[in-house]
Amino acid sequence: MNAPPSFESFLLLEGEKKMSIMKDTKVPNAAMITLNREDHTVGNMITNQLLKDPTVIFAGYRQPHPLEHNVVLRVQTTPGRTPQDAFKEAVVDLISELSLTEERFRKSLDARRDVFD
Image (cartoon, rainbow, N blue to C red; front, top):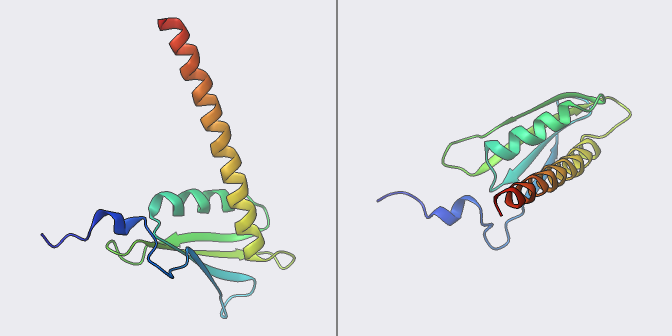
């Protein structure tokens, strides 16, 4: 079969970086952030978190090709803020939201176990 090995979708190759940032020369206060070995799930979550920030003018992502496992985010911010700072804050906020969701899920699961015991 011509399918690539399944681990290629999430394991970084030796010397490969997880993320690269390129300043957008055509648009002020904009950058393109490439996330290697990620897909629509991460791209969509980070984009939605960025859009919650009032200093973010534009946030979007694309996956260049279905067989390539990378996502390109484009972020534009207001003049007083860099896209890199907005991205970092969005990721930190997203991690805390997911941690809270996990904690609530575990508490709910433990409560259900108590009912069935």
